[in-house]
Length: 403
Image (cartoon, one colour):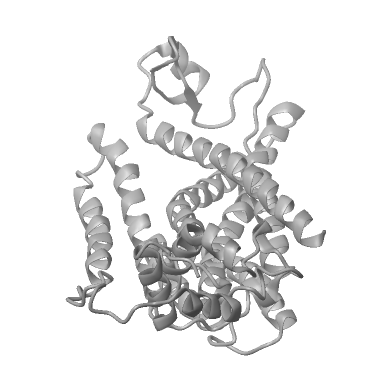
């Protein structure tokens, strides 16, 4: 019953997580686009109201005219919309999924004894330390190094080195799939913390000053505005690396590679470069920046380089020349490597493989998970060998003959 309920919890939390993440990332991308495309107004009435930039857009059969004020507007005469619950809901649903899947079942999903031998409690607490520790270091760097002249460039370099070190550490402590998810969660935690601790508090101060009718310190509000702007920009660069880490954990080719930490970091870096291309492209259209093609070229080149580097060596050995794999060979492999999680006592994913008929019926699923995706056994907890994976593949490609 516990396994059944956990399956539903994972499904519903993952569904919720994807929905709210789309809402958060969509609004984030839109406002970055909006900021980059605003132009100073020509209408004297808009200038008199304090509008610093505007743009025109058409969507859904209607015209829109977003306007951004240089400071606090004189008054707000309609509903003020806030954008923060998308962020909070994304983090809460993601952390809930992480707890249900990785912390609750740490011995299966989090700890891989072939990578590092330690207790599930220590592994779980260290994972939490990743989330909290990175935010504390990142926040401190933003408040110190990020405030200096040309500090943002140095901050970017330090963060790249820090993320590279964490990629290496996570992949030397945890199972490959867990390490990818943990790195994505680490950056995502800082993104949501930016909203909670920096962006929204500053906005609340501006709104309070606007609605209270009391005198306010414009310079202080400007500081909060600049800090919020800084963290918002950082969030947009974190987005693609986070999405890659979360999605790539399903790719056995990557999470099982001996140098997976470097693959993860380089793909994250390519995401930053590609995101920079789109951010700068908005400004380039208005003549405010150079064409961003070098960033796109660098990002795509990194990806293509990894594709070529990871390409498996071709083999001249044909299936006919290899020793025949019998069903008894496959049943022995399944009994040793799969039945502990897919047997009568424990039926993960509501799947049993403890009989010849069940193996035959699920042949395609076995081939997909063990050979193609290489996701099973989870974290290779049962120590399946490469020759055994090849045997499963040879058996399936030969038609998956039965006993």
